[in-house]
Length: 404
Image (cartoon, rainbow, N blue to C red; front, side, top):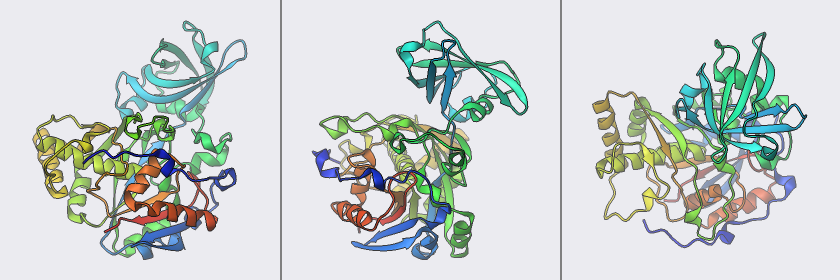
């Protein structure tokens, strides 16, 4: 693929503050649902989704679980220090493993009010976990890299216990409000399972058990991937050349069972959210990497898909190569990282349709939507604005079919 010249101004639109959904609807599946198919737009509700998907479709959703990643400490002087967890550093970079650690852990962070936190100063806070009073401590391990070490007084407690008890829900900055009790449940999908995300895979927030039951009755299967969403998902593009925008790596996990399900359903895969689509496309490119003998590490660089190639393997060839590698390693799941950047000029390999919310103007996610809809993304977003759709994380949904 050739990297095209992209003018970010072509991917802007006017989004008023009043169009941003600050709070979720009472009923998850009562959000509006805009369907784009063969150039035509129709309007339903999310509970209509089973009627819109063909029998035999395979839904792929992201089962990551949002952790309360915003930790607030208070200095003896009274100044508050906010520590936002980004990526694990030590004793492991594997998110599921570090969350259950009972020994001190170190994270790369963002620090609010950092100038008031002296490098040698240990911050401490007391909290109650399962009826026990525990002291959680934080100290700077590497100021330049914003590495912070956390330790706690009860060796029977795991790090996730402390975070769940003390952290705040990391709501997106554009909501411009403090989290409330309701957010603990609503900024989480009903199928969230693996702790590690600092932002929700919001396309999945609309699903209910009733919707899943109707999908099953219609013969629509589902499978899961894991992508632990990073704070980079909110990072605005500030560079002249779009391809120079830094994409933060995100940890992904895919099981052998999921790959086998994908092989049976190629051509009928519906991704739930941009995180799922990035995972699926990264999986394809991992197979390409193996076929091209470019290393066995499951790590997809930002622009790897855009490298010059005379031909590409089919999705079947790529996935089968991944399975061969897993059989050789005796592995039932793959863990890796991806920085994949999907913008106009990208050619999808794995997905037929995408379920997603409405995204910020001039964002990496709008660029992803434009790869699916082409110039029609403007028509879709204008229609949503005119029809009073609610935008962004707690907003309404869309079902976008790829152009054929």
